[in-house]
Image (cartoon, rainbow, N blue to C red; front, side):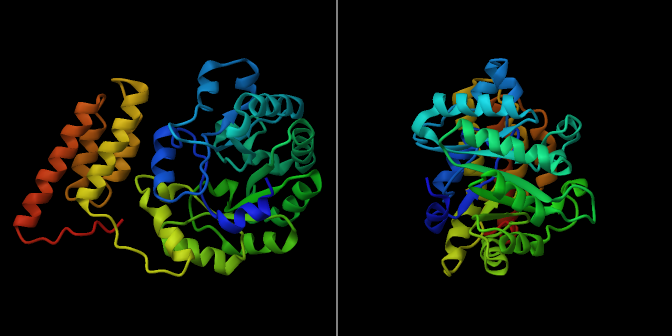
Length: 336
């Protein structure tokens, strides 16, 4: 796959998110316009131990012909061997391999992985080089503005990744030490784009379709990657596609549409995970943002363990919504 040619026609991506981009999330995101979706980040070390839970992260959704896989670790030989295993196991279903050099979580960086690799660019480059030697599929790298607040290293780091053989890079405009606070700096993405010849994917603070279009216009990036903006909001991919094409972005989803989508999301999870679908709690809470008495609904969601539990909360949300409408409140759009 030539990444430059691919991004010319496929430029709206769902970001890899631990505990979030499972089969259900990817299914809905694709239906609403995501050109490519990523698995949750996969531990190279976990794969090397033949950890079944880790391997399950690579499972495909029904009808999912291709998916990108994000791999994390810090040992070049382990990363390379497990990248080769993934390519062999997934075959034509693997779109490309992405190396996580951006995760700011302490449990990841404390091991020298994720965004901590930005502090050791020689090791980061070696990881890319070894993986490129081990696989035939494209290899991309995702990283941040820099590790320490105020120390932007992304342009230089991007050049190192290009020299090591990366096929494309994704840049998030925050420092690792910022975690998710503050604002993603678009200027960083623009500077990285100017520094390399590789395709550059912009990431950070894409909350609406208009954000996707303006991010591409202001930075010159080749594609955009949506993370938190997609949580409880698969509609954002449709909005982004329309906005990038210069069309009129549709109205935000109504309460009824949000509840219907939350039900479907829960059903997809239940179909795969059975009766206990506790991980739906986070998704359900995101869907309930902006609904009448949403805080109360989220409180009830925290006690849900079954599909019936979640549906009972969704039924109550609709009942309250009808009450608001009967009282003269206009509930057409939720203002996500």
